[in-house]
Image (cartoon, rainbow, N blue to C red; front, side, top):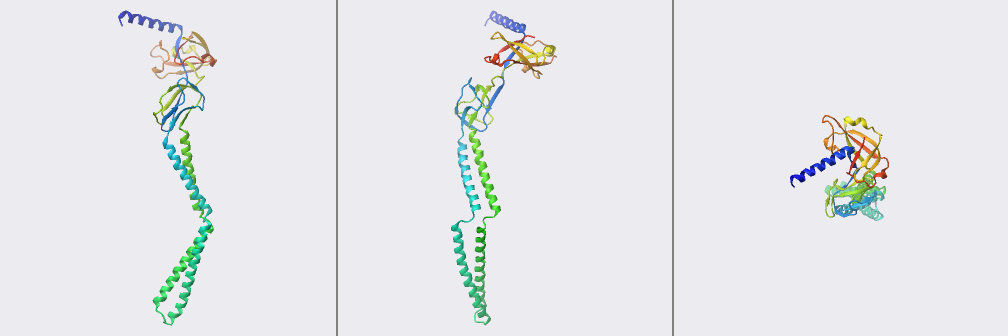
Length: 316
């Protein structure tokens, strides 16, 4: 590029800047943005929207592939089934077949106990008359005590099952069931997170991932703008702050459409950083504070087709 071309370009840019400054305070169109993220990790299985598309709240934007959820759901369902059976068994107590087995066991032990008791009674008199050794009697008496203890144990077991399982055991079984149900509910909730849902009516501006790519928790998958949220943003030095007032009606000129839009000043706030300046040709003293001015269209239909980040001017 030669010197003459550079000089012409510089003159042109200076001329454009001067015209914009002369036409009023320069600003930009802005629109409220929204980001859509995922809660759990998974690979993008399918993207159901395109950039520039308008979607409604509740529409499905994408579907994640999360194989771990399916495995955990099967495990949780099995735990619920097992815990439910344990709790039901604790409530119902012993079955009819178990009671029959315990009754038969008691009958056999009763026979052993009766026989041992008769043997002890017979040997008791014989040992007094020194007809048998004391050792023989002691052995018979030990068998008698053993039979008695076994009979008492089975009677206690029968009484326990007839009166049902202890309330503490039932409470424990119920707690295990609730815990298993909670785990299953957690998995079902995670399963729903495979569907990325639009949180509000929005226009899709950016899709950050493609099918097959890994989406991590908290990673922004979609960026969009909210309909009806457009406003105009200007930067004003404190020396000109007396020219605007919140609630004041003004006209904002959309440069690329060459038309005015009736607006209301809705926000006046101090700027904390130079990077936030919206005016491309600021004219102010360095020691002056800067303020952001926001103007909102009175009729949102006036800016329905206006593009974001385009140049506008405000004449005060």
